[in-house]
Image 1 (cartoon, chains in turn yellow, orange):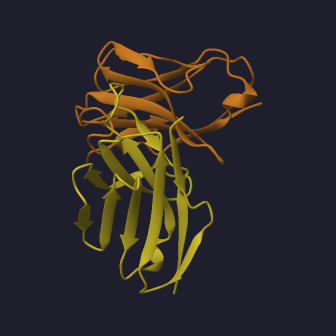
Image 2: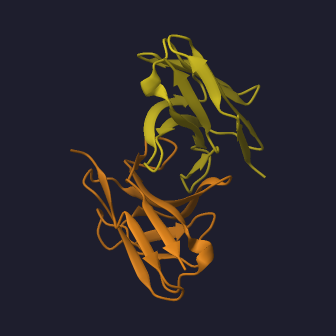
Length: 113
Length: 114
């Protein structure tokens, strides 16, 4: 069955450092991969979308890579700030007629001042 | 402001008492869906709709119903809620099939069934 794995353990880093979050998947060939931010008790907020034929995408301090051979995406936040502390969700989609998103369980990032 | 609005935000109900969670979007999106989020299980799709009068089951549809009579509204109906439906629910909408475009999520509805 389709499976998405994100680090279940929280990632703790110091302010100013680069945070790197990993998303691995199996038994799936997504056409699109998305990253969302979720704060406690709130709905996910879209951050970035990358297509299967794109290797890398950037938006301000955010960078996403997508390696369809390794079946992996890396999500980087450079010059991290305490306000970046949240749970980050990886989501795959676009390869089925239902158009649904399949979400990973998320990785919690804690940026310490 | 582009948004997806869910109501209510919090709901405590008793087993078997029918309830409806409303969802409305103001972006003229075609695709809408409902997810539930449970600890350790992540977000799972309950039902989705690709357009008015077009709905279909997601991964965990048992115990739920939906309708899409208007493009902007996509209510979630629990005909006979049970304790295992206690969860955090999110409605989401997107311009086209989710996965291909960004999804906009509502603020969430925390449901407790006792």
